[in-house]
Length: 410
Image (cartoon, rainbow, N blue to C red):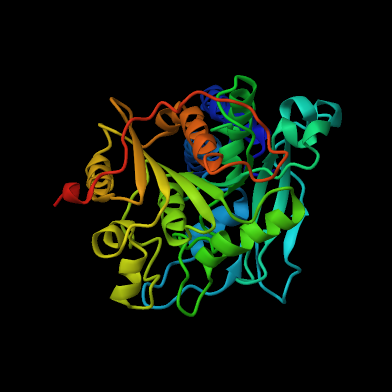
């Protein structure tokens, strides 16, 4: 039974309730000598406890989508990160055995519900795909949401803006469509004239599980930033009616870091980015190891905060969100420090929630505002084609503008 199968939760729930009941009922009815009886009772207790622990673990995974399969879970438990050496080039889901054809190909979806084609012009379409890069030779699973206008006759020649949306780590792309429901919130925002049509490309921010590659071009290893910044826009633009430039990026936690870094590093490709509870320094821990080949310079270049302190600010826009309850070195203090460093031509807006932490319940209400903000900024430079949709939307409800050079903080 698959790790993400809802039936697994039901089975473990029944076992969690049934095994203790069976143990109580059969406690004094177990035949045999005393050692056999004691062994059977101990096995019953252990089985009941194990079922309860598994139920909690699977329920947590079902909520947060940490792992998409038993294979990913086993890999994270049995493989360790060597901090001394670069990560090996592994394609998500399988080891590279040749040179796969670059592009976007459909794959079976983990999301069971499918929408009839007749309803696509009203609610849009969610596709499950595999994206293979030609420059990095990396590939990953993804969900692509095409807005209703994509299927409407009047927009048949329209080129739409696109947004790369990242989950956190560890997590899966399924989390973005199940837990955060990006596709439904995008459709609702369009229907309520709170946002203009955009194509969403929803992925996880790491390819080489269990290693957390932090959207980094690893020296001697996988070129993950190249994959997301060059391969994905080109492959998607070759398959759908979207431009290969003028994109947006959006993510939560590690995904927020990736969205910030991609937007700042590739301003020609990405026009705007959204970081929800993201961080702004090049993280190194037991999940990442050394991603920079021992080079302090490369690590600095992968730190958005260092970039703003020591290099010219890029001409891009960012929306940064956090909450006053997010503690720790990568919480609200990190966010405020990053905001203080932003200067023209870079522009920044912010949403600082009064409460909430590093959780889905904090990010979910921010998604509609983020989509609204991205819509405003991706359409701000004008339509991407003469037939671009002319949906009007009110101004995005965010408040902080770009800071002048005199407000650079510490």
